[in-house]
Image (cartoon, rainbow, N blue to C red; front, side, top):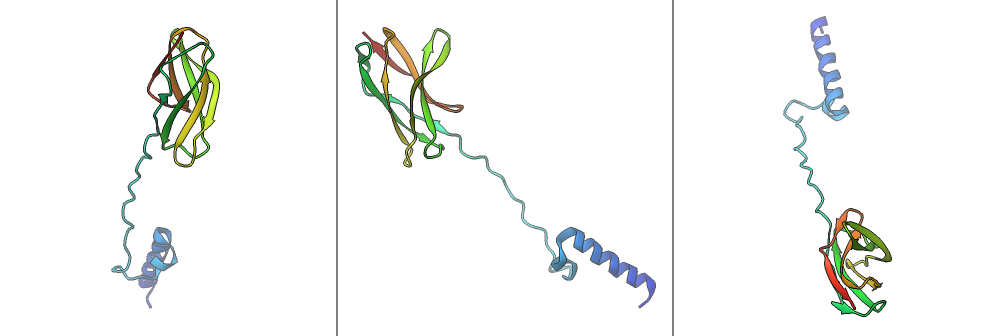
Length: 134
């Protein structure tokens, strides 16, 4: 084997090893292929729903907010938030998301008037639910 042919063979084997491992080093050009393009898809955005069991309650009367979360893991905590002025404040009312995605939270409110509430889990927020306290 002449020197030029040996260098060419060693160069091809080295390039094949760098490109795709030992199997590619000894494959014929017809057997070597590039892998198909991998298309990454973004996970579906998580969503929350919310519904109050009553639209009007007396001060400190207990009611429930129920709903479902899609894209949340089982056991994830959901928290009630109340709009106070221009800010959303988390209340000490929270519950876990069940395996089927549902949740139920017991709530008592003392601020009279129309209260705007929502459910939060991380950055995922439900639509606003309004409950009037008399």
